[in-house]
Image (cartoon, rainbow, N blue to C red; front, side, top):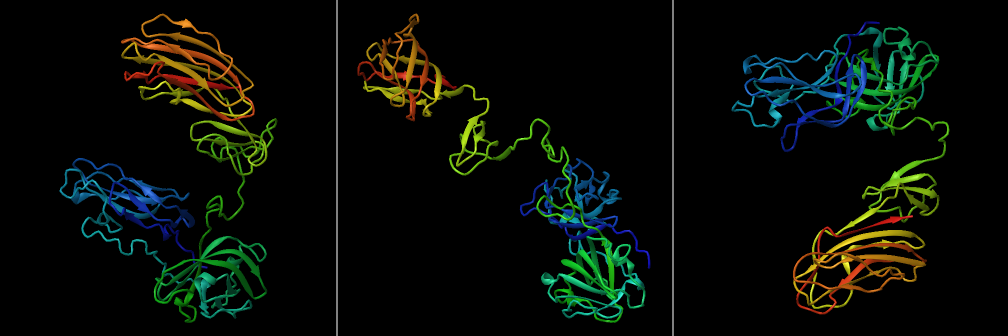
Length: 491
């Protein structure tokens, strides 16, 4: 068998283009490359070459390494006439990018299509045929076959003959190959070291000796050996797309079709589509162990996020956890629909007032639009607050109370009240919601109300709020100012 040189280069896809609206990045399409005869998967994505030099040009290379990682290798800085290519040894080269210096009249601050090519000099950059894979024209007699372009049945195709089970690329599932080539040599390479121990999976390319630009690529995933022929389970990967579609593009001339193994596919292409076994190990996903550790073997799953609070619908298992978009973590303590959930490390929740609220000519107690929160049934709360108020006259006064769900089990409130420009004093404690407090106003200065409360809520949900109004109706406003706040703790 003739020895074939080491192959490195784009195989399918992987096209490098400028962005639709040019910017400082290039787009790399998904595809495959070969690096030292090893096929690798190239994922789609953008790459950003380094910034342009202020006075000198350079040529950068878009490359893929043996792990399928794409990158840009910067070329040496030089004047435009002497711009040189970087060393891409060990990489599959997908494109050259010419980077003009920022002082050049050609510099636009973006990468355009005429700057991307495999042409080796600055003039006439051309992307046509950039990814045409170079087919080896070297005859290899032990690989030479006569191609049958009809849909073959599962049987010996005949000495020195090969062919697929379909004439449509997308329907191909088998390649039937004689165990002897056109010259009569036995092809043990198909069997991977002997019949019954096939070397799979691998990529197999069929190409024309007379016209190497005609080629057809399949991935072989299984081998079934027979006495005089082999059945290769396979699927279409790509082809040269020249002339007729599908395998019919290959010539049926005697010994014109070369069968060539060009490398094995990556062992894992993604978590959901892979070839070969995946063995989990600690650190495969940062911070996640492969298996539960001794002493922590109960089930636990991150199941997503909510806008706020625990999930209100859906079915969950004990140990499931979510992170809501307000920054809180919730764990399901009893599975069900939606199950029972507890907040992790539930500390004080702050409710802030960010804008002034002014009220005139009203003595009707009304909830402050900011200083309120939803109370859950059969839940205990500690609540504390500081409210800054003022008025521009002595007329209106300031009255207030606390409102909440109906029929709480127990309520306790301690008030600390400081009128405008007056010393603070403790008010009379309350043991229920809706007990009105009041304080006089003056023409100047700030007043403060502080309270601490405990609420053992009963079976009713509802809104806890600070309600307030003028003590005497007056066109002179009473104001509750920003930086007033309340906070609560669930226990």
